[in-house]
Image (cartoon, rainbow, N blue to C red; front, side):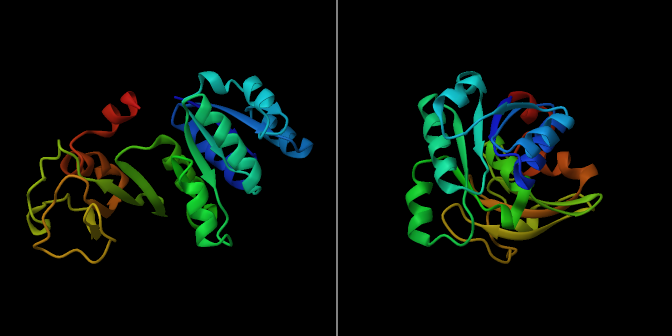
Length: 227
């Protein structure tokens, strides 16, 4: 997949690195000369200019991209970039800092595909929002452990089973559960798994593929190839 990321600060550059490590193509847009130099030293393609201007995004190849992440600290720039990207049919991810009021968040959230709070999830959250899909990394706990959020699909072999009937691998456990239209909470043994339900699972990297096959119904390789 091809992504355009506005902003090469801490969140933008780390998100770009994570995406590139997973084999995706990334173009960065930045106005600050020092940040541009740093990004180019990291061997990224960087377009110099204001990401809220359509002519700049055109130079970044927004018309041929799959998604745009507006990850600067300036909400107005982020929203303008997402609006332009929406016009081109891209998936849009908007960064919002936590100090904005709820009504401000709701206003912007209605206009984009997803809103991220980098102070909470950083590059992991931004990357997942750009990719979308039914599995998301929430946090890296240790070198070999990760907390992931998985959504039960129609293809899940566990759909219709209760949580106590779900036999996860030895190095994985369910931390939280939420019905499709409810908040997540402590999992109960008799909670049944239905399409759209969400599970927060702590798992070793080595068993993530097996866990995904059980909960989502597809393996990591297949999902990445079809993204």
